[in-house]
Length: 326
Image (cartoon, rainbow, N blue to C red; front, side, top):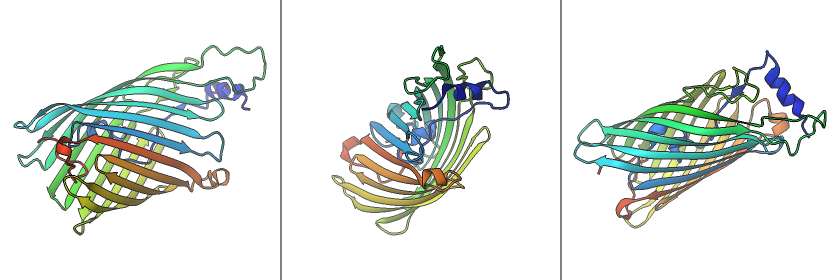
């Protein structure tokens, strides 16, 4: 049992500001609008739907659990103007610890993408994002110092704004490069329960780079790097995937992937993925190697992502970010 006074002492202390952070997933490619809203609409098809689940630090206390569902669909695709609009949506829930502290929120995204060349191998995308959520905790499983205490506020509503930009370049079928920059919580929403000015969700900035080099007819190497900044928190991740394209016929698509990643001074990760026709399945294990290791016993998190794509003509383009202008 956790005494509720701890929570309020933290919020009331002048030496402890609230440093709230957004939901966090280590899988960064399969459900890309969780990373950057500008990736909404960058797919070949009539829609893309994803579900991601993360279970973290189960050996420390009650596990931190995060679930996110995403949906994307094109609104306008102008073939001869080589541009288009896309709509995206994110719904997520995050819960942690004895207090079940967490957030439930929904974001909507509007993105515009434009081909920079007539050959459709060079694209830029710009997006805006807006969301509404509620942060809070439950008092069911806590022990009060004074049984007569009455907690009036256990939740706080907030509104958030974000934006993103992405660039994709593929000069040939054996190589592509994509870069992204996103900024979320631009308005720094307040989630204080006691009307404190420093209980903010700070602005979050993310830089992302991914490349693919196809070394043979069925083998590809995909290095990746990301940098995330949020208030005093900095996260750097880099790694590499290997992907085997086992079948690429019109009626049957099958690819297997495996990757190793390192999050600076925090975690080592191992990921496996399967792409089968319109489905993507990805499983990641995140081994903790930070100062929390004595408590976590190196158990970080497990993540599972499932993605379904509505593909035109039942044919899947091999490219990781295929041309959306057909």
